[in-house]
Length: 322
Image (tube, rainbow, N blue to C red; front, side, top):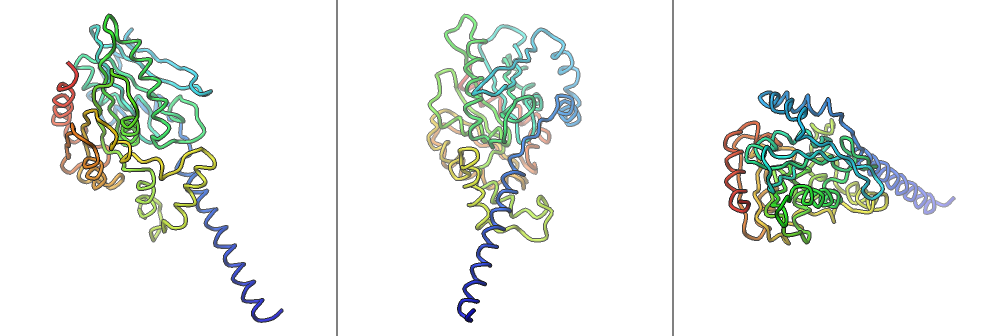
């Protein structure tokens, strides 16, 4: 074999090896990041009550009461779970509470207590492939919007009572906040009055790009380069699950949202970095409000500032739901 042919063969072998390594790394990213984790109710409640021990008497009495309704339904061929909690007194006010990554609806009872004390009915869905909901992959809040909107329609019929329709707020944390923002860009029924997002990301692409650079999270000595792994992983996700990291853009969704939205973010968040709330807030048309929780890490704003958090939520929501 001539020297030129040997060089060409060597280069070709190297290229094939690099492409194979890229595909392997990208498959690992997709499978690792989107692998379902069906947290049990026991574990979810233990986590909730460890962080919020003051909620135990309320949660115990609520779960033993006639106000607690654990429901499942087949949505798009998959069994999905949602908990409905009726208010102390009949009311058409509804809070839809959307949980975060690898959590479950039960863990949103800390936010739920705020609304329950305001006289609201609660809707606590387990997102696709979370808790007791079936599913093949975590959807990072993107296609989750369709499942949550189905539960919202059920809640409207369940809780409207003698009124023509309910008055509904959607409140999400972390991936649930991303779900809330994904919902915000859709054509929504009139019963949705306002939205609250707490520490959501600008897009799935941006969040995964941030995580690839987080050596502590990944347990690596150096950041993993975004290119070519992230674009390839996005293509693989599109091929396997029908959506790409780039199209899952919450910032594009909030640009289309005309409903009032409260943005919440801790200024010490290094998981969904604090800077993400600024472009999201800027992209959202009025009406909107922003609450930056001093010193709070990811999804810790309510734990660190319970009275201020509750007051901010209450003041915002009461402007639009009466």
